[in-house]
Image 1 (cartoon, one colour):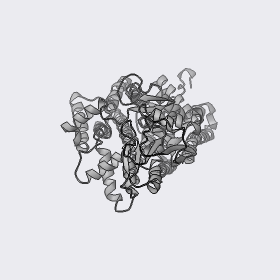
Image 2 (cartoon, rainbow, N blue to C red):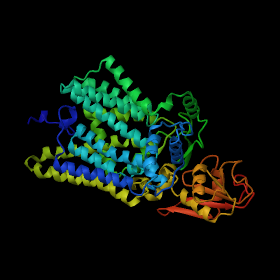
Image 3 (spheres, helix red, strand yellow):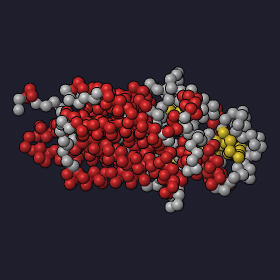
Image 4 (cartoon, one colour):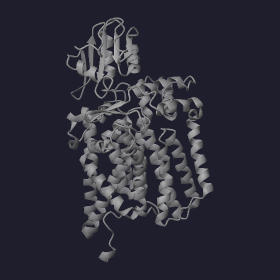
Length: 547
């Protein structure tokens, strides 16, 4: 081959998004099946190992109300789809004796496992079979992806439907260039429906721009794909109809009134988040002292295993350099995510779930590109060098993630890579997001077993405290919010529950005073004290009394 015409490093046959993909083959099907089943097992085992977090408590209560046709309780700031899925799981799981925590988390754990399969299909379409398998392996084994799939928050569903929307967009382009307009129209409708479902999962409407922005950028690659204004209207109506079918509450005036208050930070509980040694405001869209732009860069640095981080960086560099049609789909996805969530003052670790599949795709692409480059350089020896290199790189990336997940199970979110300082730094970076109130249930159980009749529990998450106290048969216990003027006012002994990550500006001075005393009870996870209970005598106010 003429050296001047030799493909550049990173070029792969599938980058043009043209023609059929290479079949998985028997070995590929078996390997993909093992990856998906392993990912599902990691997400489903021990779902009730952690008690309800405050946010999850409201999902459970909403599902209980949904059973009786009551859709107007709290948690209105979130769409209905996830709560409908939990309600359906409740109907099945309660007669079977499933734990409430399992029932509430099961739909999200399943969606996380299915995301692995969809990501494999998308990776194969964009970058080839090897990239699809590596992408699936990374998402199946990642302790961060597993851990956040195991909590009842909308981000897992949002990421799942975003993956489907991008897959349908890619297939619509391929079908149009393959002179199959009917198939292209079907894929377009699939993308529109997926957009409706992702908007019905979480009110991150900006993700709806990913398919049209990708279409606009792909037009510059010589594609025959064309969507007329009338067709755009049909697709928009499809998205709206899908959204309305599973989230009709959005159209009620009471929902709009509540959402307006929510956006104005009038209904938030605390409005703060501890991150990397500082307490930031986290209830406003923009503003001073919100979470800094490097929040998610830090998250990627400490939550991705080093080989994954390196491969992702290589894949991103190649995508920015070549900007082939397959790259453009992923770059639009990352760009839409970063344009909104990076400058946004309010940030949470779980928002990374909608970015991580795109990063895994780039890591899978980097592996495929390295193997293809090695095959070209090795000539006749490629027959054995390529499979060996693919196996080594795939095992290195997936194996490091899987090892971290196994070490930290069932608390996979607690993984911090060696680049971030390892496990000793869990309480420094994202303790609120990573612990997600783990250990709180056990602390309330300890209080319920030993506290005096009529004693008070002061905590920043009063709903779970009331729930677990009642479940332990202690309906006599008084629960109060750990805030100035509200905590420890009952005239009975007061048990103050403090948690790693729930340090806010309104309570930090009181917590610092309490930390100087020996706790009455401590809950540890992986050797770290994450929940402490302090017993205060009747009449002592933790916010004004120096101890």
